[in-house]
Length: 398
Ligand code: PHE
Image (cartoon, rainbow, N blue to C red; front, side):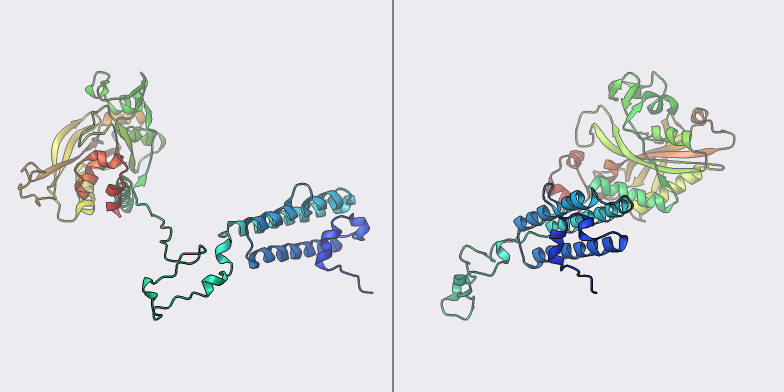
């Protein structure tokens, strides 16, 4: 005899009775019941999607399946699961969970689709009776104004697309060049201890860089980092040579804002420590980087300088990118050179803070201001423009 499989429409009634009443006593029986439920769910969902129904219909569907009081899932819990014989309980629970999951997923997925609203209904009579035809006499006023239903002559909703901020863009450009040289990227905290920001970088207590003038103090032992150099120490503390890192990030100084100063700005730090690293490696690396960043025609120049954490130290200039180094423009003050960044060989004093053997290892470090590089490369005259969020400025970096 054929077991009478009730049609799927009856499955809704079946959930009102216990499994026992339905005569379902094994896994195969359960399988059949739940298969019909899944089928029913697909049918219901299909009706809403193909029927072009609106948000209320989706809500109705949700209540029917997932409603807390009368939903099908709820009824199955009440009528099948509760009274299921011990050996079937786990199975019922598992299948019920799967059903609930697929109901949630399918209903959420139609809810995500663009809502079907009156625009997708057939156009009303008067509209259909007035087809647009350019040839028709008196059709000069052209497009049909559709009787309050749909005016296809209205402009659409334009989605404006943003642009990468120029500072992020320059950080990315710098990072890509150094990644290609085998460097990796490290980061450190903006709020930094005086130990990492100053002391371990060989900046003594009485150094002018420690003045309240330049530094935002959170408390006597804590500052907003005035440069990205503290990450040199943090990195050497946690890894052994060879070290090749760059550190993009924010820095803070108590400076009055003007065309070239802001109290928050960005730097990219670089650090390479290994055996046999010399000043020639530093020169070659920065020369390569600056040509890659500004163009192959730029020349570089290293001038002696001083930083407490490098010895010897240098300031790096590039040939003026505006007059081609001919000393013929105001931007380079008729010198032909533009000062760009600070660098030097890591002062061996730092190695004692991080327990590197100074007899074995040597290295170089450099630090550059991202805003300065961005202003030169993109011809920006005022650093404040980077922080004002004016889209007329930002859109030029498309
Ligand atoms: N930290 C220095 C500054 O902010 C720059 C620098 C970094 C110099 C690394 C040398 C080596 O001015």
